[in-house]
Length: 357
Ligand code: NAD
Ligand code: DAU
Image (cartoon, rainbow, N blue to C red; front, top):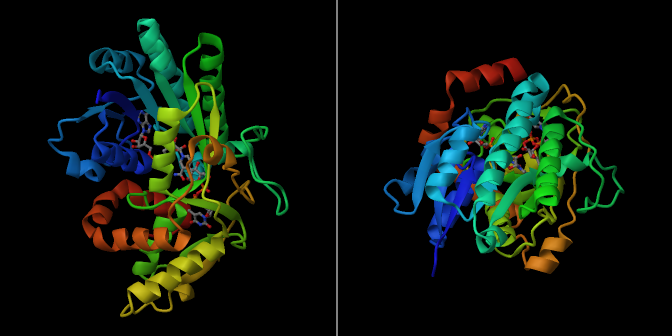
């Protein structure tokens, strides 16, 4: 079988590293991982690929068009999967500039480098080339309790600097397909959880705080709803879109798993009570603390993923219970990983955002 080469940007982050590991395990592609290694990028995630013949890492910024161009010229990929982004909503509220820089200007420069590379390919290579942009359900805005779930035609209504910057990048990707004919695809996915997620996001933050007997800070009344998807299911959806999706199309990806934040945190606490029966912090629900709400906090996200189910035969495999068990188990086993990301910068974020260490 002729192996394809993929340029994966942001492959040292949470979803990107899960994708790279899965791709290398399948053995059907050579991976060039291009990542700036911001606070969210972690090469430890990819330790198991050390010496792997189908894996290369390049440190760099997607906004650096010349560097991206030279990587494209050197490795001649058959496709690009763009995970690189600033991804945390709370950080985008505290400091939006980095989000505009990477998510908007970075995606633009990446697209420009890809455009000049793509124009030099043969007609057959151009047709087979894929640019897959990994985006979010947050671009569609916020739902009320009885609203239907987001479809691929739901109008964009981003509410945070993060989602506005992702929406801008989605529009650029759409325009590069429409104007230049580059075979671009966009996936808009709901909330992911699983191994290697940076503990600024709800699920890993709650797991690690609960293990240490720290407060579990729930914004507002905890009734905001998210649609949860286990990260490996998301990676499999991306693979299918890359291999079988139609150029120019958008695919919504979701877990059909709507839960309030309070339900999520209760599930984590109950599982920890069971998996850590000797914990001095049992019952872990006693650590739940309600804190000031996130400004502009979207009330509900829900994804209608019937298009990818129907057209590409994908559906989520993991249930919330099985996925959450695997996730908690991973964090219980990975004390070194947890230690390594708790740098001074991480502690400074937690202090500035929650007011305590
Ligand atoms: P993450 O923050 O864990 O990882 C982002 C990665 O991008 C890091 O490795 C970082 O070093 C890298 N990066 C940042 N700026 C860069 C730049 N300028 N150039 C090159 N690399 C850069 O993010 P994640 O949670 O893995 O999300 C990946 C993508 O999926 C993002 O585009 C995000 O918007 C999207 N997404 C995330 C979720 C989720 O629940 N986490 C859901 C839907 C979509
Ligand atoms: O929907 C997809 C999006 O999901 C992705 O595009 C983003 O990259 C990803 O970060 C995530 O965004 P959210 O804002 O939904 O995720 P977060 O984990 O930050 O928060 C999930 C919910 O939990 C949200 O309603 C806010 C709440 N929350 C979060 C934190 C960090 C709390 O109540 N307390 C907290 O301390």
